[in-house]
Length: 230
Image 1 (spheres, helix red, strand yellow):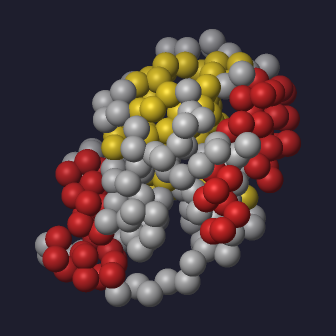
Image 2 (cartoon, one colour):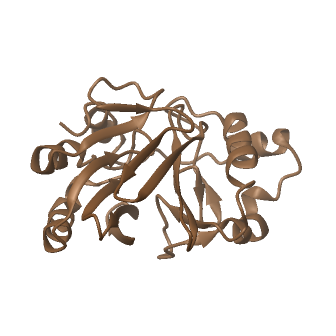
């Protein structure tokens, strides 16, 4: 299995191309339209069939490349079942799996950052990894103050869905603003300041007190992404 991480420098967003090289099949998680040429070049150079284009949520900071990739490769568009979109081919529920070659990507519904937020896990004999989108970041968690965000729901998504995974599970986040590329569940338990709260009430108070500015691309990105980037 091969994982190619692609960073969008404008938004510090991470896209992941995950491939089974033996079967020459791949999927892509959270593609960004401005990095479309990079994805095409990588997929073509490795002679990969792109089966799925998967979103962790409806993004507010960049426009997805999902529709462009579907047009180019025929990749099916997949997103969590609670996303307010009509353009997706697959609406994923908790526990649903997508297969590419001998690999299986499992859906973990993790509402909180947005109502439809999902993480995606791959387990194989070598390692377990989870693509956490904006739910769990390195040293942080995704904001919960718009797009039907809910800090209480996010607390339970974190504590009941993600932090119960094995400590050596590799965390691949949807963003990092310091150039870090991955972490582990165990490291986040120890070092992530937002996970040091004692209870859900403390977490809600912490998240409600962040007072963050809106993403600068909010007014463009969300309407476009509700149409899968069309």
